[in-house]
Image (tube, rainbow, N blue to C red; front, side, top):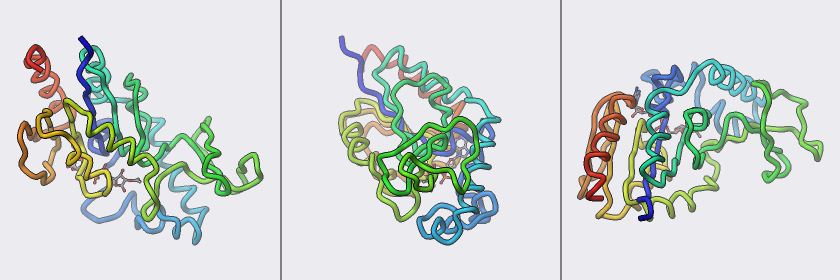
Amino acid sequence: MAKKKLVILSGAGISAESGIPTFRASDGLWEGHDVMEVATPQGWKNNPELVLEFYNQRRKRALEVVPNRAHEICAELEEYFDVQIITQNVDNLHERGGSTNILHLHGELFKSRSTADPNLVYEMDGWELNMGDLCEKGSQLRPHIVWFNEAVPLIVPAMELSEKADIFIVVGTSLQVYPAADLINYVPETSLKFVVDLNLPAVPDRKNLFMIQGKATTGMQKVLETLLERKAHL
Ligand code: OAD
């Protein structure tokens, strides 16, 4: 029998236990910066050096951390299900945790992109991207990140995957950023839905919805156990 389709929508909370801070800290700043300064096209126009340095520091940090049990469980689920990750995270901890199918809705920290041609995307070797680093057409490279006020190119495939999910798991996201926050609304009524978070986000009550409050590692363990118990009936 074909494996059931399981989609995981992850956010910053899944990487928190690996040591990457989440975005919405109580002071409203990201690592001491106003989001408009470092994660918008306007910020890039005003001060590209600052933006490059901000993402260099994020990359440097990402290289120091390792995937946690929650990332590993996402990968282990592939044994039983046809798993697709949709992540808002720009780190590569799902890849390093062993997952195969990963859609990065908000871009990827370890890729750069031409400012002249958005189709020119490059893998990065190390953590540094600097002024003067150019694409093959001679234009400055920028981080391959979807900034605020920019379109989300992969949202349509993400919606299509959500519509086809037999099981949908939301883990570690405040669901405050659209259009990602809307994806759960595309999941069929009959499908199983889990929301795992330290501070559960508000989600409209629906059929087959399980809310699990806790850390991503312990919450995903509960999801794994629940799914394995019910597997025969799915
Ligand atoms: P947020 O910082 O908004 O939310 C993180 C969520 O993780 C919150 O709901 C926390 O309660 C939860 N959390 C924190 N620690 C946790 C833990 N150990 N276990 C489980 N949950 C935990 O991050 P996102 O929802 O991912 O976009 O933010 C969405 C987008 O906003 C990001 O992708 C980013 C930002 O703009 C870009 O960079 C383009």
